[in-house]
Image (tube, rainbow, N blue to C red):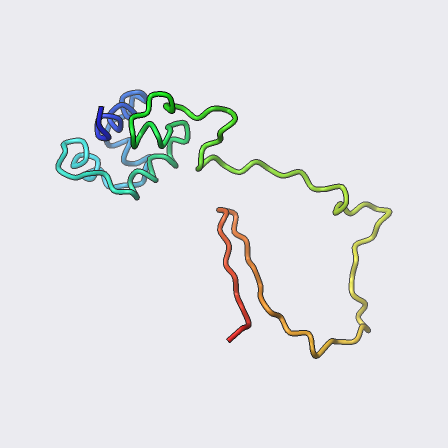
Length: 134
C-alpha cells in the first residue's frame, strides 16, 4: 500500500468526502483531488497538516506503511497531541501566608544592570530569543 492509498484509507475510515477532508486539513479541495488521482504527490506540508488534524494516525504508518505503528500507543504520545497541563509546584505557589515578593518603590535603581536577553515562550511550544548583544 503506497502513501496515496494510506491517505485514501484515512478518508474512508472516517467516512469523509474529499471536500470534507480538505476542509478539515485547511487545504484546497483541488489539491486533494490531484493527490488522490496521482497527478501530484503529497507535500511535507500536506502530510504535517494531515497528522495534526488526525493525531491518532501514526506518522510511521502514513509515510512508511509500518502496520505495527498504525496508532500511537498510550506511552508514546503523538507529536501533535496537545501538551498536558503541568501542575504548579508547591514551592512557587502563593498562599495567603506568603505574600508575593515585590521590589520596594524606593529601592535604588541599578544603572549597571543591563538586560542581556529576553526569552518569549509561545503556547505552540516555540520560543523567540531577543538578545542585547550586537
